[in-house]
Every structure is written in structure tokens, then in C-alpha cells.
Amino acid sequence: MTGTRQRVVLVTGGSRGIGRQIATRLAAEDYAIAINYAGNKSAANDAAEAISAAGGTAIVLQGDVADELAMAEVFDEVERSYGGIDVVVHAAAIMPLGTLLDLDLDDLDRVVRTNVRGTFVIDQQAARRIRPGGAIINISSSVTRFKNPGNIAYIATKGAVEAMTLVLARELRGRDVTVNAVAPGAIATEMLDEFLVGRPEERAEIAARSPMERLGTPDDVSEVVLFLAGPARWVNGQVLYANGGAI
Image (cartoon, rainbow, N blue to C red; front, side, top):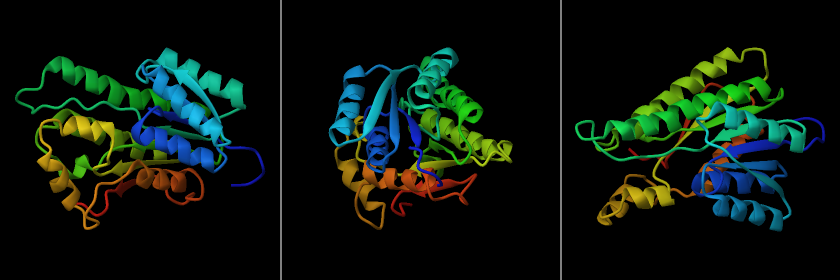
């Protein structure tokens, strides 16, 4: 990175879990933060207030990631507030559970809309606006490797996220913009808690899959994102698996 201009990052899904920690971690490195949220305004405001209390700068912007008009306005507002965008971290996603045999097709349509169309919309806006020297970072999941039964829709859509990431990195030839995906393993978040409802014994089993013998934390993921957002200019068109070596 060159010059003294403060770098600007938009984090989708930044109101809780991994997205919130990414926003917090980048704010600690003097990034100006824009937190996008879909419906939980209180959580988004809490995240922004915590960043401000720690000496950082953050704004909060509502918008459905799959709505191209709403997200164009979100990007417009980031540019109006901060003068431009250097990094986009797309962490927003949903995870309805079910097997291929029993998953309701309405649930399939909902997860495809958020996880696939939403990624396309965010990456399209980012590709059109991001400044040279910037980075686009999509949050995927190590489930694309593990392929756990009962999670078919989420796994399929995260596979699509990785495919779009790799193609976009090559489509932005000559722009000096990197495009990568981070694929976390099991991370101790509300989403994991929801996944494990009624199955408390599985938490220890999942943690034991890693040689580190623990679940990951949102901070484990945010450190990888920080690397890709700033110094990792020669890492491009990659999927980085942040899962503690789980198999």
C-alpha cells in the first residue's frame, strides 16, 4: 500500500459473527468501515458503536445483497461518505439445512438468491467501483471440501461462490485488484449454534476434526482477511482454507 489515504472497506453481513469481527479487525488497522446488514439494525449499530468507541470510523447501511438497486445505493453511499472503496468483504450468507431428498424448493430458492445471486451482485458492484490496489474477498466455507450430508444447499451455493471468485480474478486483468475467497472451517458463531441445535455432542466431535483440537473463532478468519485486504498483493484468484487443518 502506498500513500497516506485511509483505505475504505465495505463488509456485507457485518453486523454479527465472522463479518462483525472482520469489520472490527480492519478498523483496528485504520480502515474506514462500512457495515452492510439485511435486517438486524440493532446488531449493526452495536458493531459500529463498538468500532467508534475503540477510535475507529464506521457507518451502517441497510440493504439486501441480492437486490441490485439496493446494493448500488449502498455502494453509492460508501463513496459519498468516504470518497471511494478499496476493499469489499462479502460475508453475508444464509444456511438452511436439509438433504437433497427433503429440502423444500422454496428454501433452495431463498439460499440461491442470497448466497449466489447476492455474491454476483456484490462482486459486480465491487468490480465496477473498487480503486486500483484494492481487494475483493468473498467468504466461502470449507464445507465445499467436507461435503457433509444434510447441508446440500449451502455447500452447493458456496461452491458457486468459489467459482465466481476464481473467474472474476481473471476478468479483472490489468486493474490491480485482487479477488480471493476465504473458506473457514467450523467457527464458533451463532450460525454454528443454529446448525447444532439438538445435537450438543457434535460440537466436541467437530472440534476434534482439527489437529488444533478446537473450533475456530471469528478472529482466526479476520486475520486471513486482513492479510488479503492489505499486504497480500501476489495472492490472487485463490481459495484460502482457514480450518485449522480439519479433515
